[in-house]
Image 1: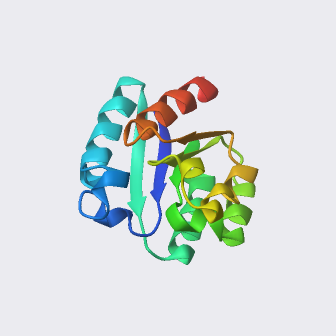
Image 2: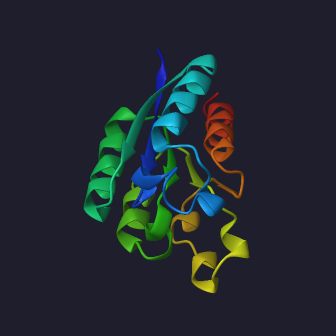
Length: 145
């Protein structure tokens, strides 16, 4: 049976390729979704890709993952630094969680150095651009085998 990985994306990631490409790159979220699906298939995984600008919708996806997913890759974007609600939802998820950030948050503003999600994440990948998602899938595959 193929294991499903939820790939969850937070606010403003729908603007990838347009918003601050010098920081976030020129690839779109659709480009990342396609690459993730290809890598996941090679790893024997299925993906469910989701993006929302609304915190509650991300929480709902984490809740759905409890019954439907073996693991979660999450780029909570700005909610990284503010959302206890997403942290609490992730704490109720039993599978592995990998946190991804396109930019190296530690080279940026001080407020970006703190992540609530990291308190639950089994791994954190930052500063690798869109490749971070692919690395996260590889790590999840290893954790799930």
